[in-house]
Length: 575
Image 1 (cartoon, one colour):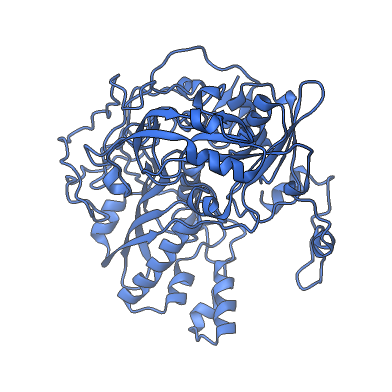
Image 2 (tube, helix red, strand yellow; image 1 turned 180 degrees about the vertical axis):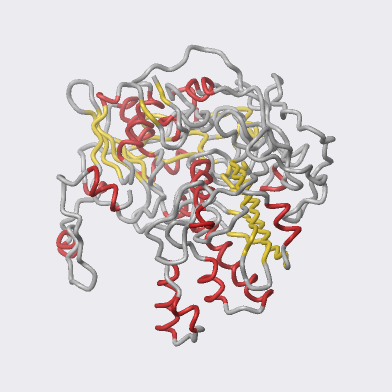
């Protein structure tokens, strides 16, 4: 929350007139860390503690024909073998707690696995070694299926369907679009008038957070038919809500205890260790510990998702950027987790800290047969910032301009209009560039040294563009906001034969052929755009990707009831 909001709404809660830079301020948890007194979840010991290990799929994509647990159940020390049928409500997605998205991830796979390492059974045993040996004795008969690991391959016609809730391998936003979009001004017209058009493709790989303390939880029975859960989660109430939903119990029966997190970096926001540890306790009556070993943390611990960005800039000879187009693909892996939210953050950040009068973005949340992705530091911003700043260097090189001066020239000034139709304020990129150049001994021109974020902003730079070219590209039908609350999904692991999502007809456009494997940022299959209409019923733009549509979920069952709540992610109210 910006500091001025805190001062306005929470002035009585704490003093925000901070002056701490350069002072040796001690962290609140420092003494506990250096004396070894900080409590971690694994420090809680219980008599009769049992251990949970998972049987994990060796295939990227496979149908589960049969799970044979008889040999494992007879092994020494085994208290219970848990399979999908033992999970009371075996479907979830974290953002369903905010009424955003469809349930698309099983705690334990029932009919199909969609990534290597997906859990198909769990063993509760007296020792970790006994649990591991019993897991090795579980026999699973798989039918191996085709898989897809590349985001653009995943949205081609005929690609394997990864996610039952979204068989077209694309998340559906607000029940309306197969991507998150931003339109500001007329990018295509600005590109045609620019002196230079600079294109670039930028790829970020998945990154494992690799905390020293691997993800885990310990559950134990309490009195009054309650269960306590000590956990390493970074999001205690998310974890509480997820466990209550998967186990189909009131959250009042669950006592969650957090504490010191031994490294998280975003990777412990959507942990699924708590519901499995609690389920083990429910089924055995014994305390249960479920903790990743290092190999599991690296293989199935949710990483920062891969991102692919195509950028196209229209630039004048003097370095002014007059148009910027983004086409982005987030690799969510096999399920949604938090990736759909990361894209909302990314699009909310565009076009970076620069005043650009024409901005266009189509950003897709794509499902592949990879490990489900989640948050990591700067979630939703870091990857696209990498692409933007690499591209700024490419632009500087193309126009023969100093890269720092290019940034100063195009940086936000206070009073400038952002592409999201909000005025910029408290801007400071210019001053940051000046200080960085000074400390690096990097020479700047007199004009760049005199520039200020407090001058030359607003005015014409603070006005909305006279024309914004809108479109209905990526529009889908068959989804409704009600289906988000119900979390419906096809029962069969294969794509449901029900109604297909149909894109809304686009005026003056004929169906486009399939996209090429390596499209440019201006796919050549798009026809030229008609003349744009200012803030009115718009024609489509000249270029944007058009991935394959996704089938609609079934619309059956009563809507979920709950307290009225506003979601900043979806903008919906839940009752």
